[in-house]
Image (cartoon, rainbow, N blue to C red; front, side):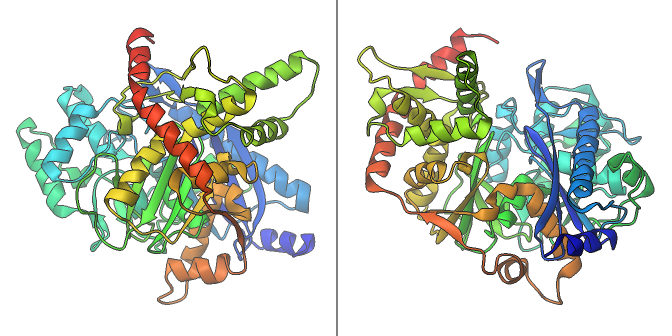
Length: 534
């Protein structure tokens, strides 16, 4: 499509916008009606540890969104000489889970508690036992019940409890709703009804009845919608919040806001049964769309859904690339001090490729990438840690591969439960996220960790912002009875080929040996948490 054609699409108001609030970046993607990305903008941000709570100030949500959107507009102007005055559809997504409560006047009652917090162990354990359903610490219901157990004063005044995606959507449309995939990270979903599980809702209300709260759980949770449904329209106030230049007209329809799990499934065409995807960035999670229910409840396995409500088994780890990125940054500082100029892509590429030269046993090196707690291995706090013996082969290749293995070690522990104990079948796994940017390296390590072929598509780098833009497109494009699976396979991904790497036996054996060393060394990490106080 020519530049002139794209400019015509934009000026006619036929472009679609997707925005995702990631852990370290807010990204906006503009697509044409065929789903092809045509412009983008981004804003870097970071969570803060305040009073031992991982949080973002909601003011930063708006300054970040406005900057991100302004940069997208600048990209449109630079590439096509066009202005965005009208959009055909919009979608918002964000990191899942967490806790943002509001009173009846819309006042925030407590700091935003993100997915990264591991402070709800008591509540998560109690709810898992009561509901016979794994309730992870990240989930909104775990945060709510922990606040109740803590006797926090604000709980009695809650009129609305939502997630980051739900909050942004509400402010821009006035609609208190989330997509079913996002809702599945708040409270268990009944996939037959595509709504919160009614029996579990009743069980929770009975559990807290003696507290005498003026609310019932369903009354404070957002409405659940599925992909393809309309979730309201951009209001005049919302248009001004998004576009401070004042050019954007209100009225564009919005699709249900989704979490990064759902948009990751869409961006990798992994919404059908026996498909899976892995998102590897600040956190790492793997999702497999199930054919049937799991045999038992596993505290390491989350049960969420696709954006259309199909059951998904999810292994979520709080930590992935943060420690790895910190080491690469350190090497960058060294290069600069030596007078060498190296951009981020060159640094990552060089160091990642060097990892492929490592010894099979990684020279006996060991690393833990725990910036925060990790529930799969039982940690409420984390301390990044590197260890070696005096006779370890301390080479750059061994060092880098050790940290790549560490980034995926906890994921492997969880996935082994799913693939080996539950015997879940997977036909394909697609990878996306920052770990896969260096061609062939992260993909090869992931294939070794999962002992399954891993594919990466050319579009994988577009990520969740593109995924939510596609969901917005599905809302306005879908034909009568057209499923999300067929829409993605036949209209978006048709003809788009990915590159697949099969697991190499030597790599698999190497990773398995590392996991043995990793699990045996967990007491070292425990000692670090107990000895190095924040």
